View 1: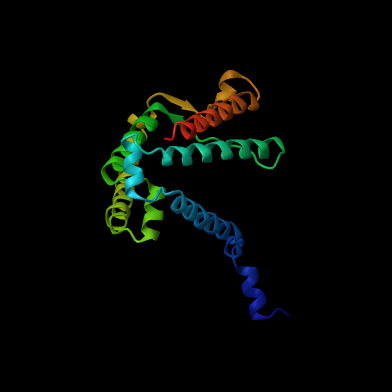
View 2: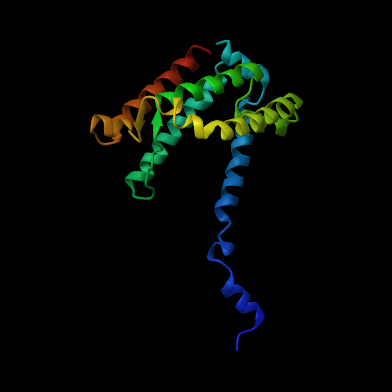
Amino acid sequence: MQTGKSMDKRMQPSGARKDKSPLLRGLAFGIVFGFLLQKGGATKYDVIVGQLLLTDFTVIKIMLSAVLVGMIGIHAMKSLGWVDLYPKPGSAGMNIIGGLIFGAGFALLGYCPGTIAGAIGNGSLDALVGGLAGILIGSGLFASLYPRLSRGILMKGSFGDMTFPRLFKVNHWMIVIPAVTLIFLLLYWLERAGL
């Protein structure tokens, strides 16, 4: 005869006992990411504005370093069979509209979503009030408008889930190696130029 506890476990949907370790890993990586953003200076308003004015290239160096490491890492894991890549479909409309909204918010407030979180962690009131409010209001507006936008302007110039290796019909390393080389040379030049 089964006890009440064992019957309760059997009656739970399988999703109720879901593994929480991906969430914990995500939280840990988020904390490390925020720490590194803060240590790199990317959560400081003056550094962000300096990047927009092309007088301080700290942010571009951080972003290019992340792209370099991420590109090598993800494609190495793909080659080893550890991951499969499923690119999201895209379009010119999505990129242009998203870029304009992101750029306007970035220029007006002096933070992007990642640096807003880091700046809030630093205790920046402007990031908390302006940044967090902007993210919540902007996300709500976008969610409410998305059904209409997804049938219109966002789908203009759709290119599906196309990637450069598929477009040029080459092995992904034929794109990754030149891209990594160019990024590395650009980072080297920025550092040598003292930018």
